[in-house]
Length: 466
Ligand code: C2O
Ligand code: CU
Image (tube, rainbow, N blue to C red):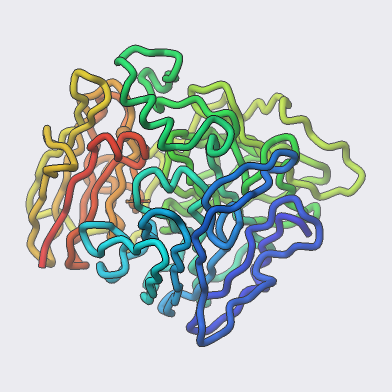
């Protein structure tokens, strides 16, 4: 039962259910500890000691869990979550991907002051769209600790089409092993552009700066991997969330192909693939029919040496796959945005105008800009309420950037007509990509690179309208 987020264990109704994301602990079913209706969820942020499986580290976590508790809600319903800040620093919670009331967006300095140590903040918001989301701290480098967790919004009217579902949260981990994420940022800021001891190369450019000692699935290293238990012949939905600060993952399930059904929560025309790349902040849902045996769920840290690893098991007796197993699917063609298309009913209407946003790097290599501006004096894009605007994202840097817009789901236009709905989109070095945004949620919205280091090194703008 470990690893099993059963579709049928969560509480329906207006209040969110909460439970631990299952790792490899037999007998612990997610959603088991349901939030009490009428009271919602408490997220207590505090220093904690957590096990990565085999190894224990000191970190900052929600409710002492890594990842934080699984929050489930029904589309159209209300999430009530009380943040209790027992950290030595101010903090907030951001609900990544939700078309949310801006006062609940957890964007410090934009929509709310951060909650001080010893303070509390009640997040109460409706979740209009079903899908796979997550929540995380939006203060400094806190998101590179354990301050994140999955948020699943279900649609009671959605035809199931599958028998079981699992939530798979990917992460890169250094906290408590190689100092703290703040130490890592300091080290990076002191480094020079081509200091390859810190940086790693990917997609013809450089992703992340940091090499991480561990890569995790649901808080577990490959030494004591998360195990998802099912039965042969079951049609299973996997909800994959990349909560890493600095690592994109190339994902494949040994012995299986994957039919991708959702991009960042929104349904897409199903496309069957061997492998896909998931950038920081992105989510992909896929379904597959499981064969008998035990299979590696492999997430290679793209351009780095490591891998996150879990086991999908449908037979008790099958030998456990090795974390070093060869998964040939990983070397096959990767899913590309061009392969993806939104559901017709989710198409946005054609834009009324176009603006260009350039993604740039300052010569130091440690400052990142949007239209030549840093977050300290950010690029501000003003739009009219109700309009649809096309943003041409032009990456003029040699690194790639997963760009995320708060409060909206845009349509990536791979040609003028089609493309997936998303809230986070990866730009390869020197790539140009169009996203159409319908301004239907007035507020001041952060628009930033979801590489946490780039974000902290300036790569943040604002989309605003009243
Ligand atoms: Cu998950 Cu401002 O981001
Ligand atoms: Cu970036």
